[in-house]
Length: 437
Image (cartoon, rainbow, N blue to C red; front, side, top):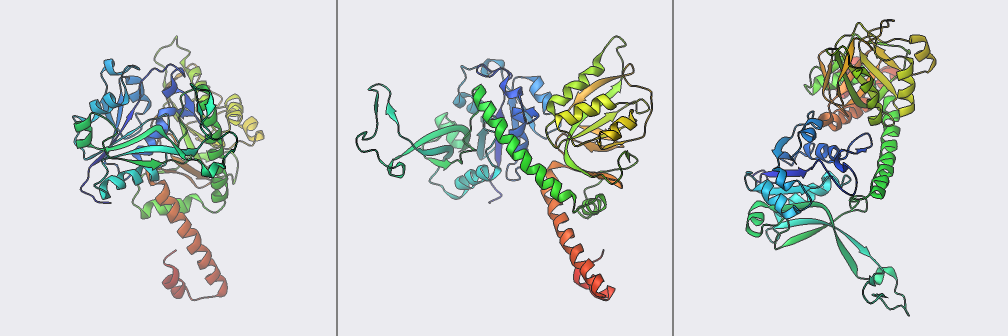
């Protein structure tokens, strides 16, 4: 891909919706709907800048752990009378860019590869000024006025003989900036129709659409859990720590926390909670921590920063709630309690130890699923975490693929090295073949 084209992306997120109440805030697989798309855009290395377009400070706050640019929308443009063209024109007219992307959070399954393909089409083909995502289906359609089929009802054709019905997914638009300014639209005069897969074409507008998206997400999640389970048996914290050192990704290892169950391993995504010292003595705010369980999905790891670590957060009741929510373990930056009961549950917990002194009347919730720190190590929601007896390693989302690829290389290299050792090969020859170990 050429480097002299500046590509920017916009994700419009308003605070209110009609068909599904607070749709953009509604939790899909444990996090607000819009975050799925925002995180995906930020992870695309071919996009130079990602703008979150909203009239709501609440929206910006929910995404505060993500590296985006705020685009504060005028309240007048935050209702259903504003169509996609007006919104897009308002977004791009003051932005320096060559290629502009508008992607809607109601289409959470659009792949980064599809977005990249659309951008490359504009860069490499001057005959197109825009790209619109569509789905093509061979349908037995009817005329709704004449109440008759649009095919020969006496000789029903095979579906493969039907003409394609082309449907705009309403999920993804890519256009040259000068074409937007010329036409005032998000689709130009010479569009390329980019075909979506069935999953990518899912558009969440009604409650039943959300139910379908939840089922799809659960299936994808189970696939990830199976992968992590298989991978965790092959890796350890030392391997990942060495990999991070090799890649110069620093300060991502948490030490000084003990595991309650010997030889247990955790590999999953972080769901974060921060507790601070209580300032309002009349507040029962600590119980807001229970709301965090609504965001936990199968295979997650609960990660808690406790600013008053000498008082216990997370005991038997929390462990039972965690198990019910599908969490695979917890990492607590402080002391916990009910050690015997939690051990009987076979629920892995890393902590600074145990105390009977409760945090209930001393602490309050500061944040749920925001950036936190344990032992000066930053953890963001959905960071990948590996933990065993020797340490806890945080893998930032943006480096995840690179780190795992390196780990696969190490697994392969170490298996070959062990075989050479068993064969009695000279150490110097082993190092020459497979490198230092």
